[in-house]
Image (cartoon, rainbow, N blue to C red; front, side, top):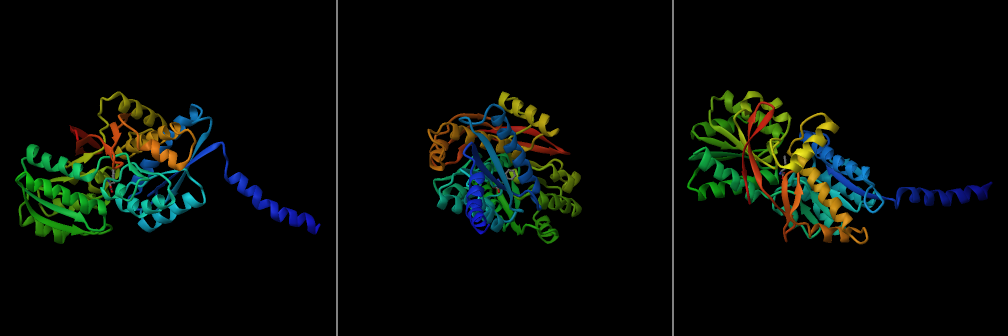
Length: 374
Ligand code: PHE
């Protein structure tokens, strides 16, 4: 009896370990804000990733293996991002990681992926520092010096704005960087920055900053933040009687922006990764598949996540043997990939070279205005 027990005691962990690592599967991880004040970022991203993974599995997977996606929620917190990425690598033994959306959370996790030599592909973190962490870190999107330039030019050429006020989130690497890049370009183009003010994520009252801004009489206000705060800022701007045009970046992209900001966000412009009005065949094809699966229109995050996943799966397919280092090497070689968000080439700094769009908020829809090439 005792002997059988001993045998069981020793063999059970062995069997458990065997079931954990299934060699017929390719395990990839996704970490994102599935909950919290940026929950639509994580959820939309996960939907885009799952669509690409399900599609690949429906056609037999890669090299005869099924792809298994493990998603972990970081609740929108950088410290959680670091901890779930450690778990994905150490416990789940993923060969590659997708995530995060927010640059601050990608920056918290990237050093771990880099140290463990597991390739990490962020679909949508645009701050330049993210991929500078090291040669295992990639992105599927443009970077903020480009995004800032796009809106600075738009403000100058299209809106004919001469005086612009900026309101940035000092807790967000994304917001701080994008504000700087915008200001630099707008001044270069001859514009004047009449105020450069700040807030912190989770703030709800912006009246002090907005009152200060009002006295400077700006033509436009640039708010490179995330949708929850942007929606509130927009409402308080109008409550104070400020009529300036509101502008922002990809952080505005959420079905919740209008829910929070209501009519105050109408007429605002922001730069983004894609438009649902795109006439490109790859975009039309993606939208049809997305709508069929989720019964709604995809936002920019779903589309760029879909592209990021497709590129990762392509890199895995191109390896001779599926190892994290081989996947890294193949990711670095991706050129002219035709995705839902346009044509994507990975450059020598592991950033994606691609175009941006400017859209105008009109209720729950973002109307396409223009495309800007790099
Ligand atoms: N680009 C933002 C960042 O780096 C994240 C984001 C991308 C948010 C796309 C919304 C849409 O933090």
